[in-house]
Image 1 (cartoon, rainbow, N blue to C red):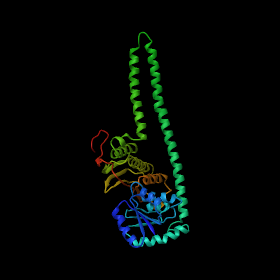
Image 2 (image 1 turned 30 degrees about the vertical axis):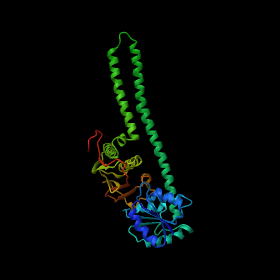
Image 3 (image 1 turned 60 degrees about the vertical axis):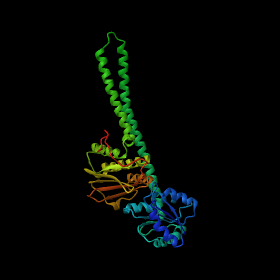
Image 4 (image 1 turned 135 degrees about the vertical axis):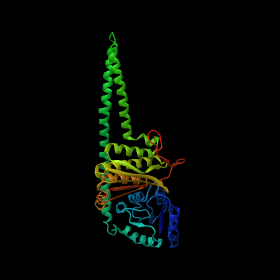
Length: 379
């Protein structure tokens, strides 16, 4: 049996590779999702054992890509991880097409036995995971999720376009119209003799004030599209700024238990972490009835952890199906794109905690720095 072991930690791979090879298997190794897909193209692989946290393509996303392929979709896929996960995370993985969700440590011989059991099931037709729906139903649910997410993204894009169009028309359009009227007045006044100096002075003062207000409107629209702090001062400052804006807008108090200290992330990672943070705060404002939000963001051992806890009404996790919240589904999709993991914990009356874990590889020359505020002072 040709087995592909996928893990970004070479020591963890070695724990499986040696006993599997001793059992007569041909073992191939990959340090991430992208290299695993390349290996599938080059070698005949009979089974895959993958960790979950893999930069930049995690185990869930790797499985999703494998199941999309006509050539590879019948390959048994075990998600083998020591990362703490919730029932919702496991359900999400199973619906993507994972055959088994196995927690470390498990002897290699037991994994091999499991793979030999799964191989004929994958080749002969739909499987029925213990306590789960049949794979066909899971595939149908995933399709429904994708269609629902596509519809939501279209709606969000159109709503955003409408909001921006109104802002441009109502704020910028009216401001330019007033400036045009004042310019017409000045043109007529300059032809008069004597000049109405007092009125000209009043109008020019008003025009100057109007230009200042218009500049602020343009800055606000640009910030809504993409905060300049994200580019100028980095993700840490952008997260703090977003929390301040959220508190001002909603009246919900935000308190940092651990101030953001984020390494210099690649641009795509930083943007998506920021967008996920925005969506978490939006969900709190819409659903939680919270009065306080506690925040923490730090990098440890190559993993960036962003934790958001609110003291709102909470909910029963068992009632939260992956397709029940399109906002959650969108966050999961963003998380998959950066090879991370999203965990949600909640109980009725005890609030909700959302934890985003992202494997990070700081850009060359970048080191974690304390966040700075908009004036450049350290927090």
